[in-house]
Amino acid sequence: MASMIESAWAFLLANFSDFQLTSLGGFIVHESAFFLSGIPFILFEKAGWFGKYKIQKKTNTPEAQQKCITRLLMFHFCVNLPILIVTYPLFKFMGMRSTLPLPSWKVVSTQILFYFILEDFVFYWGHRVLHTKWLYKHVHSVHHEYATPFGLTSEYAHPAEILFLGFATVIGPAITGPHLITLYLWISLRILETVEAHSGYHFPWSPSNFLPLYGGSDFHDYHHRLLYTKSGNYSSTFVYMDWIFGTDKGYRKLKMLKEQECKAEGKAM
Image 1 (cartoon, rainbow, N blue to C red):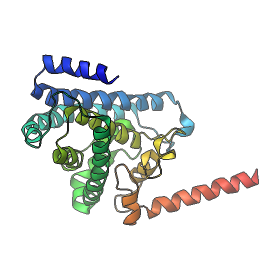
Image 2 (cartoon, rainbow, N blue to C red; image 1 turned 90 degrees about the vertical axis):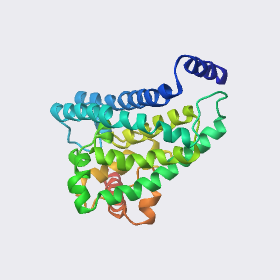
Image 3 (cartoon, one colour; image 1 turned 45 degrees about the horizontal axis):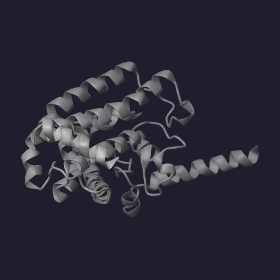
Image 4 (cartoon, helix red, strand yellow; image 1 turned 135 degrees about the vertical axis):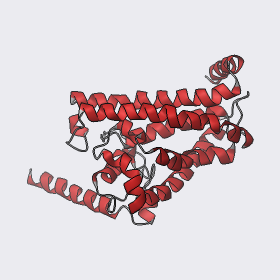
């Protein structure tokens, strides 16, 4: 398996420049991971599939979904792609490389775990700042246009927010100077995480059912349902920052009440 990956990577190195692999390749990886993981949730909602796992009973209109996709494409090509191009020299300066040999899985997994922890910490504080009155009204309210989120709404945001919270995603790689393949994997995993958190569905196989500190869709859906001053649940991936700083009290109280209702219904039956 490792030799196959190295052979495929050698082919890319032989046919594309480092700049192309980093900027354009990074953009292609991002778009592929984002739309391939996000579009199924639109189809689920339209077709009414997996209805019993849908967190909110409300659905988005086709017009609202189309508006989201149209603006996302505009933001991705007009904001995300230029950022990847402009920041290429910075990542090279910080030590990012694309040459062979590829890093070991131990190095890759350690770096990505570090990225998730650091991103969650930075995102939590940045997100809380965005929920202050002025910034929410002028910037973050764009993201909250969708009180019933679906996968693709995860990146539906004001361009200023894309830059602001995007810093949380890139600070880890900027510090460690990873191999480009590690950056590809990090981008993909971070996208899969945020799409799942905004999916609007909580399945039996959802990661939060197996990973104790993972927030997931149920945790973040609560954040979208409430008014900005009372929402809480500001973390991106994990739950411990909200627990430490007491910004998940409303969510925990609601979850406890739901569990009590389920127990009461079970006894009644």
